[in-house]
Image (cartoon, rainbow, N blue to C red; front, side):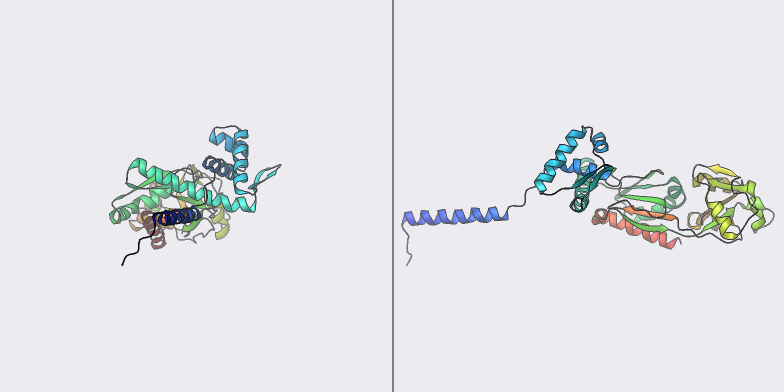
Length: 323
């Protein structure tokens, strides 16, 4: 037998149910987002350590930046900066918050860029011209064969790049492995520097020896430091390392060596094909191991995308095989 409740009781039950449902939905509502423009102003100020420089980047007045930061601090209920004479210094809370903001803004920027370009996967790598020509480009076809739908673009420059604001996924730089705040770094090439020259420079002999390295034959890049360090390491005292031709980058140094113009000091992994084909020969002297090397810089969030992760693994593997 079915028991039917009076209409007024059914109506009251519906009211109670709807009220309970509304309360549950309110409890499940997400925390409110902070004012989004303020996040951009905060991130820029944190990166520059200056309201004035952040305002210049954002094309607004310093007062507008200060106002947005105050809005954000009011929303969060804590101070993000300490105002000091030398600039804006992040508090402990601000330091933790800026890392999350930078990652979130970068993900939004990348997602927006993908939608504007369509669904094609693009990887932008910034590196020095020498690394691109001598090491990366000769090997890149093997990755393209493995991932034909991924478009790898190479931007060559010696300047530092901003991984958060230049839409750069990876950067390869030569140095001690200094890592920008919030970024990750892994060593790629840290093998020895070896003196090499063209077989034409020593003909008719086939082996190059120490006496083939003279002051006038030295080939330098613009920093001129490698030969000085090598002479100190090898205890060679009769070579004037301030003499010899100077080139803007390592590409010019290698090309000059290939042309028989002198002796270059270069990383062995960058000239493997030339050594194998005997277009260059190694001088039979000690190599130089330095703390300098090529390092791969990236943001941790970059590796969340499988094509990026595949390219990262490929780079690290190729570097390991070439040393």
